[in-house]
Length: 433
Image 1 (cartoon, rainbow, N blue to C red):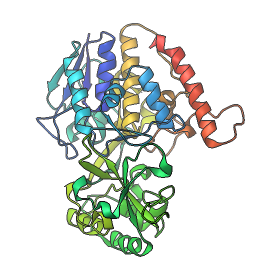
Image 2: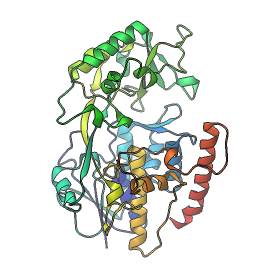
Image 3: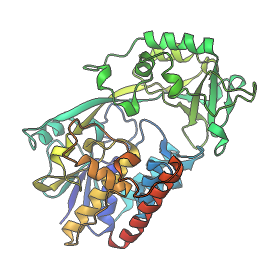
Image 4: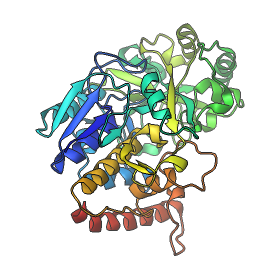
């Protein structure tokens, strides 16, 4: 008895680890480094592409709750993230290279996991977890398509933000600080006056995009929208989005600027920073030209320009159950972004639940039912909810969890109580996992 896990991203590594920890032998198939996707640059597993931030670590935030649930349930990914974290205020950010290396070492050294470096073009025989992410190869996509002749894949485009060197940022025109002074001063804030912002906005709206076949504004996923698409939706849109100045007081003036571009540390050494919210598919020359209009980035050195890449996901409510299994064919399990969960932590959660449930089935043990009152269960129930007609990728949020049966004043207090109830349920489930 063994399980084949296809793909060594966050979801695949988590699924493989949970199976192996329960004594189930795993063959982990990964095409890197023999074949690389357009969005990846390293041969290591669990490579972070879009950002080094795993988002909020606060329990008043749904993704903070999801991370805490995973920690308590023995997640490999969260353990490695905590080991390689860098300061980022109230967020969990990691040294990306160190994180991937830590995950890779843990997976390769597990006695129940055998790694095979080769591309998978057909769905393997036997029990299998397919966690090939947003860039599933054409050959495997066609093989998966034969499972669902009456359904279809859905596609959208995802974007990654540029990275600049710290030494090239003009700190005479920027300052370190977190919004509302929360946490330590982990962000570089690059202020813009109204005149500077308007000039920047006009050029951003007119900048030339790289050719992306089939790309249309209306198909952009709202959770990772290219900054130029956001800009075209209105002059003030960016000021209420990634460039909002609220809670950021410029120490040089004592006032909030008209707009603020934030940079977030991208490695433990603090030598690299990514431009927060600047996912883009502009041509590289245009990125340098337009982003140089931000005063503190006038002479910025770009280690990586923003890139656009394809994201493929299933019409999961019609195809998968709450354990991420194919309906009517439970030997085939999916995990990660291909299921329509959006985000690194959400992908990890899907891999965790897929691995745990598959291990329980193979070992003749009862299923572990994470209810909708938990973040892990809420995600699984959302992607398998047949009442969802126009299925789109979903980040974890309190809106897909049942409301409290009591009135609580204040959003933070309400969310904190939701998290408390969820963690109580998880604690009761731990001995069954």
